[in-house]
Image (cartoon, rainbow, N blue to C red):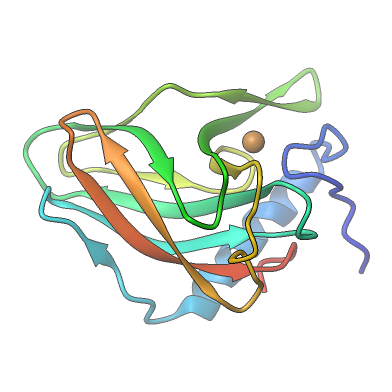
Length: 163
Ligand SMILES: [Cu+2]
């Protein structure tokens, strides 16, 4: 099957591309199986982190689940990785049948709640992948929070179909 998606936030990914994307997330989660969760001293943890790379010169997207085990909400305000020139918070949105993406300044992680970054929704945008972003490798991603705390997790680099 030829991937129809030409860029991570391509308008070419129409409405019917969405269920497929969610199926891929489910598959990826299965494939990851007992993937370790990366817990920070701030009570937050990252699970199932992965980067989707299409071709090395193109932007890559990052997906993960972020859990908050504390009684206080936490606010994700940024991300960085040595595998990415810039790593931005983005959100895909459907407007009149087209997928658009927008930069996001912050994402709230509710107390005792979680936020999922997944195709079709929130994602990290790795605009300028470096040589470290190689399929089959793991790359560190550091998430920064409003209270100045941070959390680093290893993300598996996968291909366009999540493998
Ligand atoms: Cu994006």
